Image 1: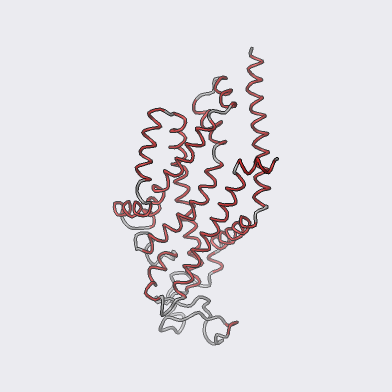
Image 2 (image 1 turned 180 degrees about the horizontal axis):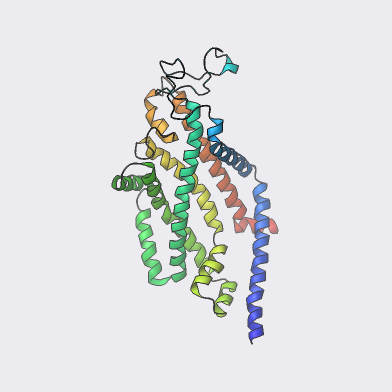
Length: 317
């Protein structure tokens, strides 16, 4: 009897590992066949490179006032020597803002701030949402009902307005904005994880592990969760784009990152009145936000198509 029970434990494990390996390979092949996903990955890789080496790429400190360094008495338009700018004038690729700071350096360092905001907020939301959704889906019953009703209450509010309300309570600042956005996005990840856990916990290999005496902790965190994270990866990737947008909007309103921090939303808010007299001061931060969000959206769409079981089944036929 013991020998047969051991066979029950080993057989599902081998079958499950083999199946997971095959699905990962298939998902990888599908992902690298999508041009849009590859474009998103290349753009994101470039942004990460710029964020890591921002101090080396930027010619000036982002908060450095250039009045004492250069003969500057007013805001200047972009000056690029290759495009005909006088050689005797200092080169500023994106011009100089109203506070006499190099716009290019601020945009470059803004990449680091925006990516930090996106990864941090979504990371916090994923950790909290995974724990909440996993416990809710695995426990079921009244525990599931209470937790999900609380999540529904949070989802009932418009996310941006709820983030503003949370910041109003916590106070202005980048740190509080990170907490607010993480709280707003937690229910989305909780619902995704709960749905996956409800599906995976009925699989045969989970029943076999339960019959062999595996405890609830091992079943949930060792057997169920690793097989339920594929939808979470896609949701998280797309969530980073939304988090960067919301953080920029909060900073634009003066609730998130505060001057002189070189955050794209703050830069837009500071120079919004210069949109007609100096449109470049609004254009470059705005286009940076657009490119970053586009990269995450393209990557998320590619991951969704690659990890979709229905598409995988069609490809294998």
